[in-house]
Image 1 (tube, helix red, strand yellow):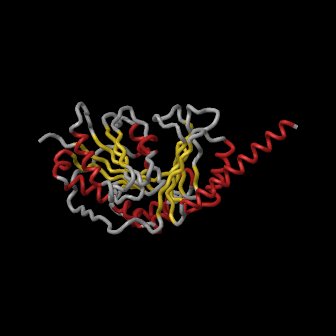
Image 2 (tube, helix red, strand yellow; image 1 turned 90 degrees about the vertical axis):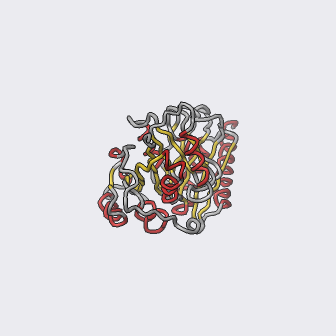
Image 3 (tube, helix red, strand yellow; image 1 turned 45 degrees about the vertical axis):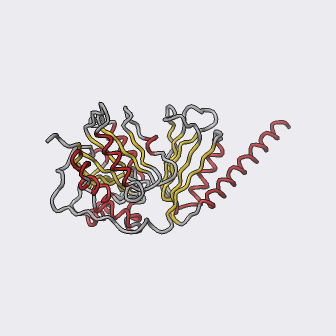
Length: 323
């Protein structure tokens, strides 16, 4: 029987650093020959555009979680990948949505007859960030579920929260005593024993946490730097912990060929990163919000207020220039 393709399942709550870790892994020696499947919870997919990979083996499953609406799409994608002419796939990495139950992904790999004949479960890797991780573990059952199913838990953002490592390791060890708790530079795509005996995977019932929403803001025209500064300040000051995740690709006035990447979770907005070029043909500014207890109308009101303030400021400066 020919060797089955190992699958790494990458899970972790919203904003915990999954895509950053995945890019690190793909840039390492095991990146060659790795096909990537990305799942996002939202109506516009961005994570696949933020993944740096040398070939075209990146597949986006959008508008739903792998444990919900797009589970059938995962089966279809895995079946098609292994029969793709000249694919030469050595391994597969599946980046789950931050709200997905990885147990459902694991079930697909282990139980679907076609999938299990071609693929083997390699390892389940869960990212937990030092800034929001402890509170998220306590408040969000999805996060605790993700940790409980992991073979390896990767601690992220320790640089933003000095002194948090010891307590976080203690909490994670209590949640999953069998998992290895490691740092990002200790993680790779190597395989763990396949189909470990005694592992039982159950899919959590019901929907996701109460009040969780996903919506997108799209702008056709480039964004002024002063407008962006005001917007980031307003998001941070007004949305707070109800902002589970925000990410975006932004077309900024002055350098339209080099978009900015926006990443944030709850009270933390990371420094903007400028890409060398657009990952695709779409040059519009796109921002995806995942919130809890905050409706789209709140974000729309903030954006309208910010854009109005920026427009008035530009008019004032123009008037002063004519004096």
